[in-house]
Amino acid sequence: MNLSLVKGVAKSTNEIKSDYIYFCFEGIKVDGHDFVEEAFSKGAIYVVGTKNINHENLISTLMTKSNR
Image (cartoon, rainbow, N blue to C red; front, side, top):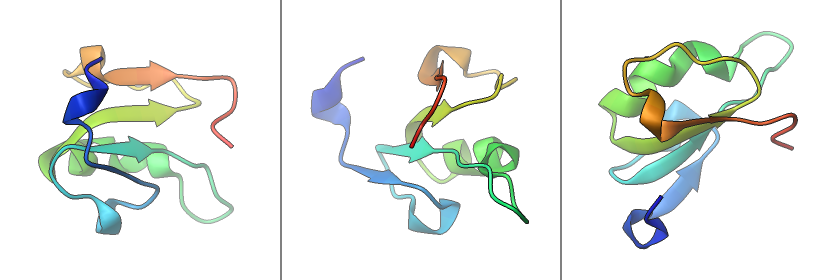
């Protein structure tokens, strides 16, 4: 991962800009993992989540025990 490419981080797809990292959070009403495709389409270059993320861009995803 080349961190010099990262321009910011977002926890909502509404905040994503080109070259951002998107952090997926599971909430009471909404699960951020459901928006991985949207995150990449809006310019995210990496996604971090706590669930297995099935996406064609798996090289840019990271599963962690906790993202909080």
